[in-house]
Length: 337
Image (cartoon, rainbow, N blue to C red; front, side):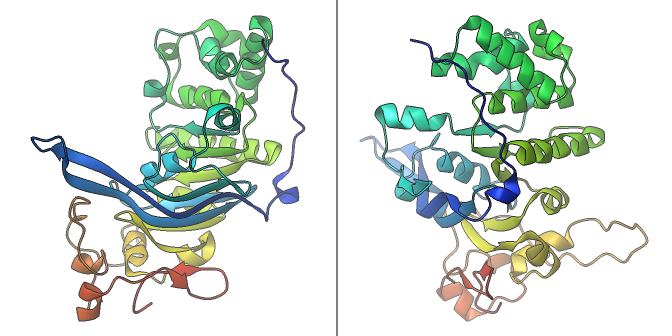
């Protein structure tokens, strides 16, 4: 039996920030690589290795790091499109790590994901109105006419004329397609959205528009974001807090302005050093990072960053640093921070 669609009251962020919405405790995710003759994995890829993270209601946490460090995997774990091997996941204080059945299906409407490639996220054979309304159909919400009307409303909200509901994805630009994907993510009125590199596939000219759209709908509906990106400029603009990830682990976290203006971990410093200066004539900081990201199939002993770190000492090769407080509102995993 279909459910009646009802509008949710808009909830400004300022009224809701402060209590934890999403929590991860010591989350681990490994993927098997290759199989023996007896079907056992030959090796394990350590994608996420003991990560703990708290995201408060109404805030945006920026998750940054190089490609292959586990950012996207962590985002998928938080909304359980991937299942963790170890650790605990909580949503509004409720343990959802092994939750299943009707209760998990009901919760899934409360968190959504926006992917990197908008064209790959939309079925090219499906009209955009049907794509936006599809989550409502899966959830059994409303009748066909109600779902179509809600799709029009969501498209209007993100700046796409509702009259375009019968057009196909190829008839839109990249920026418009990402707006359609945002409309689809909003149609079930979620509370938490994982945005996985949502502007990296877009032209520079439209990135700012889409970023501003994310901020506008957050203010309007009181949304909470995990914003995955390798672009520190984008993260500085959108995030309240930043978590820096390296080879499956978080190595520094804290308020975005503090972390990005006064980094403590050598890896965070290296990421910032690689950002081109805002003024071309300004002297550029030397890049202090060296070498390539080690393979997550065989992570280094001790501190995982030590093969590339200019501060590395014998202790770094032997002893893995823990993520520890560095002041009242930030943490860092470095022996010498």
